[in-house]
Image (cartoon, rainbow over all chains, first blue to last red; front, top):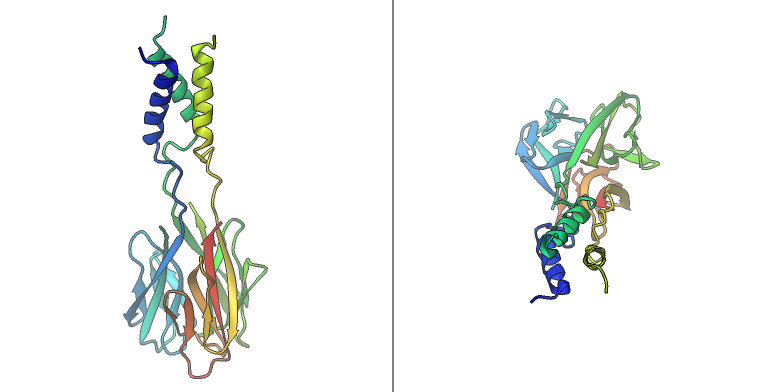
Length: 87
Length: 87
Length: 87
């Protein structure tokens, strides 16, 4: 006959394994740059736009639909979106 | 008389419910843009400044008190702060 | 003789303490700016580059080896990297 102790330990072990927080792996921020010719560049799904860079020294940009860098200067030959997520 | 098994399972279930990590919802990065006229734009509390954009093509900015984008060029008509947090 | 209840509670308490998820402290994004003279500025290990700023109004930058802001304009006297991580 199993001792109470061993029954208890077994049940606890099973319960905790299903919890996926044994302990939670430490998350971190991971970023990529996505560059396109022209005035628009979009981040892939699952990432967020944290900043943009534009050709011809242009520092005026805005973000459309929360996914796409838009460089506003009249002459811009490329656009880079900086895209970050948790890993 | 309750079996040991059922007592054990009951106690474990109660204990785990109080833990709020069943399992932890996966966090992600969420960002917004805050635009102001002039050379300053601040991020709301609880968010962090990840980058800034300035009018008149200006790409020179710094961040004041960790909350506020400051566009440095002599002529700047608007400033945008990119503000991110975990959700 | 210890009651089943107290044995069970004891074991559960011990098991959960080792789990470090009681409950997990809420993480947040923390950023710093790292500024250097010239056209390059790098983020410290453990942080990610979310954006860059450059002297002389330059808004054209790229990121090298995922750590270093590179300002591309011909005349650039300083470079700032915006570096973020989870805390």
